[in-house]
Image 1 (cartoon, rainbow, N blue to C red):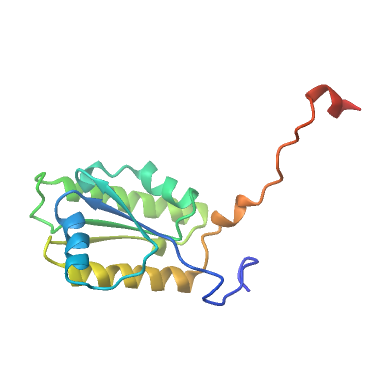
Image 2 (cartoon, one colour):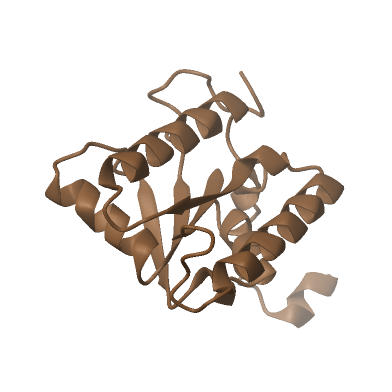
Length: 161
């Protein structure tokens, strides 16, 4: 048992959020499908115009909303459709990893990869690898905090009695 959740594979299915650029990252995911490459079905794709538009807050929000791992898939370094957007994205991922470390969440839950659009098999391996990593790390502890008591439906003045 880890964090109140059984370690059996049936009980824990890692949720992975993938932020992809509109060009190479998303196209690599599309190519993976066209090539019938298999990767876990629980990968949630979030398409961005460029990974340079990745905000640290987007990455942190993904964890807060229950992602067990987050990946950012960008154009190859030096080959960004927005010149240096993926370099800005890389810096933001590094900043987010430092913040994860500070709040006690493993920075290994967040990773950035650089691919070209034709690298469907590589995208599938990245998705499989991050899912395996999330499985090894266990559930995101922030996800476990969803069992808060329901708010009271009593009128406020009746609570004082």
